[in-house]
Image: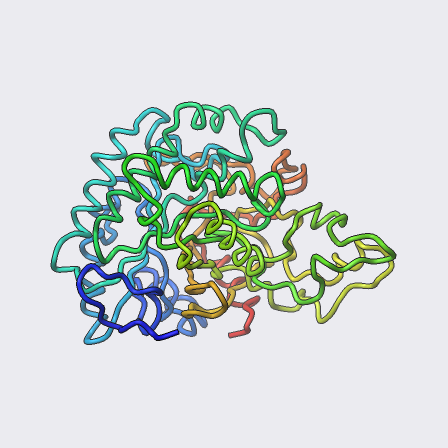
Length: 427
């Protein structure tokens, strides 16, 4: 295939925005990273800008707002191409299955979401001053999959997710965001697609693809407004498990029957992202869609990384002994102990993958270990408490979270040090 030109005509998006482009380094994150002992080894890496409440657009708590980041990106751009990565994350009734990431808008505040959050972002991105930037948006992480997995008669259902399924405001909100942001010619929308340890089961995989299609055809959106999908955002699923595959068996027992895999069809993020891409195309998304994988915290290196497969005594000894992902349970998502930085951000690393990205800035907390009063709408989720013994969504296991964590999004020095120590590839 011919390589698309690096400077396409106005309004013509390139196939892969990351190809041949630099990616914006957030000076605020970079300063936090560089201030840590050893942090300068990664402080020049690009990370996502989180627009996680209305106030973040103008800049809250002394932080840079959206225009300030885009102006800085123009400076970093120079004469080449530049990607800016934004996380668009403020749906009404946000994150209905968790508390740490609950948002500022109530379940019914869809109009406020449209007029006070999406419209102002779209207006800034449409400013001709920024037309030369490639703006990648990760649209509403942790939202649509909840409508499939945490509703109805499922053991994992929550009343909040049932409410959001019934009122349709996740679907409407995502559709509106895709439509409004997709109308800006240099914006590349990537819809959040969970991770393999969430959507990799048969009863989640197809229904989630259908749900994404429903959102991409709501509120004026069409599948053409979707440039691709992002998996593993702010999560820890290993990129590639090399010590076992889904097709292996031990004494005639499939790896799928192990406690860790638990009948999933996928054991790692790369195989899931590539397979889910094919599924999404089959339900009507463009054959040219690309996937992003967040590798900010899925390295699982350090001394606990297995050097080879586990013993073939039972299927569980085989999987447990060989798996890189050392979480207690794959449903654990908050400030995970033992995690490491993953693959450094890079363009076109594998078939169907537009880039490995650090969409979640490493060293920024997933949520506080105990309740902390705040004005950001952030609740206390016991999945961030190391003493918590779990719920149906993590198989009633310990949370695996680090102690003494600050509010989500705040700098967490101990976590950053652990991520560097356990980086894979090593720093």
